[in-house]
Image 1 (spheres, helix red, strand yellow):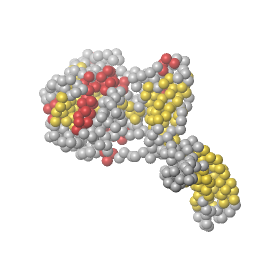
Image 2: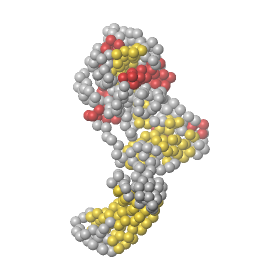
Image 3: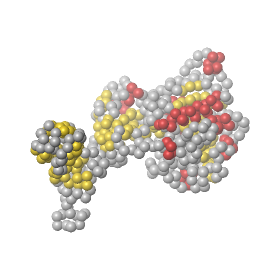
Length: 549
């Protein structure tokens, strides 16, 4: 586990200490450095944190590192206890945002952390201001430094509109609130200045953090201050790139918190953070399933069959959901496109950017409904059709993931998500036929989208919105090898008008084989009057490999 203290000299002097015991060492300001999982950006974030850690170790031996993939909430909570300086790099989730209509302290204005230790740098879970205010105890007037975050300094996410100045001010004020309640005297959000620069100035001299922030290398000279509405007695300030945008620098502070006024904390030996577990409860879980067919963007129920010797252990259980795209057309996030300005940090020379939220990474635990034999959850299906791996994790009532042994009880699912126009076919994958011969080929087709194929309509009406619109199965030959000769014409089989969601049709297509021996592909599609080919609309056709002897 990558949670380390710079206390080697102290340990040699006092001998082995009991786990969690306070060591007989001089009290010095505690510095906690947190790096959350942020995909490809994580390695760069770890390097920036390590730069700051090395600076801190020149002035205090009380330095704690908690880096992804070990940055779980229990580990971070332990590291923050008594910290006078906190550095965090990772995902940020604030408000106002497009994700919620009102502020939600359960996930907003806090950390994006590893749901389970050792799970890599991709998946992350938000622990918001409510958990920080309730469970974190910083040193008095601690300074919190937030770097590379979305929302914390008033911005949103790369590629999204920032909104108004008033919305940016709300984001700044909201993001600081939980840390202030945990004991912070100042919360700085600076997207692009290296944390090492701030660390050196906080641990030397007598300057307040407000003065340090005002003189940062990325200062724009557009400072504007306002009283905090979330934290009594605190003042907020922003220094945007422009008077009306580019919100990448902010501070919320009280008095003269900063250098020379950091509270010293006696160092402690870190213990292994306790992880909740459901082992020993006799819990057994069968393959989860979805109650109804998943349509892109729809709300459905996830059902998890289970049995247990002690149902009370499931009280308050939350279920986390993560959709990992397999072949869905999810827009790729290119780091080079995410750099608002400038593209490199002058203190390190490294390429830097802010990592936005991405599907397939975010874990969102929701309190489950515990039935007698099934755990049920309402979930939202991704809005892009395709195949996904649905990963389910189990969490306690506080949102903390149960240990790895508990998670191993839950199988992952492969899910196909249908779009508005989507067909499913039941056909043989291959066939062998004679040249020029006629043959019958059985096909079953189902409408698995959210829109009917055509409409029943009224034959007496002439308006397109009111007349019948038909659909049909179409079989089309494609040559796969060098065989020559004319291919048979397409064959059509009419489907009932207004072929609705869930409707199915079995048919036998009367086909004629090509005149030349060889290998062919029989492509089976649905064509809807007024719409055209479903394959052209993005639905997958049925493909049959045919050998003509």
